[in-house]
Amino acid sequence: MEAQQFVWKGAIPLQIHLHESEVTTLPPPLPFLVLAPRIGYLPLLVPQIRPHFSSALPPGVDTVWFEYRGLPLKWYIPTGVLYDLFCAEPERPWNLTVHFRGYPGNILIPCEGEDSVKWSFINSLKEAAYIINGNCKNVMNMSQPDQLELWRSVSKGDLEAYRQVSSKLKLGIIEDEYSVNTNSNLPKPRASITETELTGQTKTVRIPVRLYVWNVTEDFEDLEDAPPIDSWDKISYINRPVEMFKEDGKYCTLSEAIKTLLPELSCTADLKVEEGSKCASEGKSSDPLEGKGAGAEDQGRTAIESMDSQASSNLAEIKFVRIQGIEPRLEIPFSWVANNLMFPEYFLHICICLRAAKENSQ
Image (cartoon, rainbow, N blue to C red; front, side, top):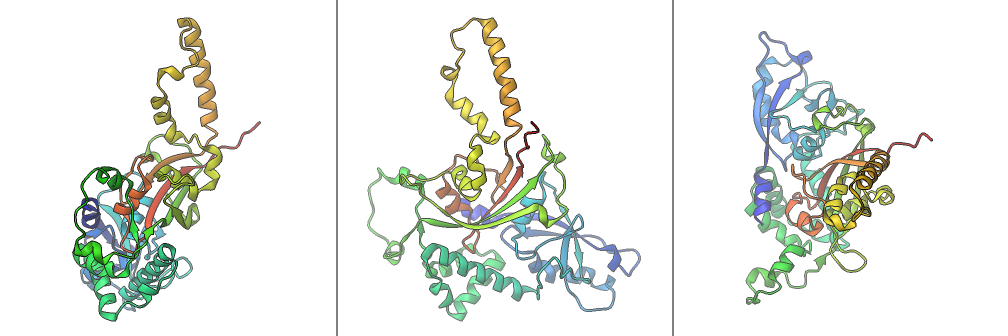
């Protein structure tokens, strides 16, 4: 679980500016610098931010919200997910603007501070439990002290406390293909107390996933040239479970899981992000021109490259896949990804930048 420890320690440096329309003092207040936990939520930073800007605010009741490049940020999405989605090229520190007035109720659902974030988290946990176990009774039946301790552990980034209280939820065991393969030849030790406590717990075969697909129509080579996200309409939100095993009983890869979530990609199985590794694995023996003269080979290669270039330009192209700030190889076992990169509410959040397939003009 070393990867999980790194995930919980992950943080994003933020530089937070007060919107100029709410500044009532000269000189204006300096930006506020803070490290925001990746697994946390922006409203949980307000107690640290408010004192820094309070003397510069106009009269009125605080209704805090954040924006990036003019777009209000949805407060119930984890901070790390927002960063992975909006910063195609890493921005450090991440420059956000905070507002204490003029809440955009037409874009954001109401947020009453930490309580709203807490209940949003609990509801997501219930949803994940239903996907994993077929019911959410263990979450519904949590004692008040356990519920408070669970939320405290998440909001404070206390992984050990989280593990202790979340184990009571018995949300199944994710069987990791890597662990199964590496441990299959090892002698089996006597069951420990922890293993005994898990007896009767079913192995998880359905993984709760939240997929954020940023659809772009512009073509670009470098991520620094990617167009900014100026509307939430450019983000497709998919909330769907993924089966960990394929029909033949084998573990699925991250690539196969993504194609399950995006069926429209099934018809374009040769996604450009996969073409390089596919050609490399096939090697020279797959070259239909092998053994011919050098002149014919050069002409043949030129013709094939031209056709491949024209065909690939008409395919949907995945620009990046990000999970917890990582851009993993698509052939990685999906079970490992779920085991190690899942968020505390038992959802796996995946960000994808997808350039839409070009329509054939002919």
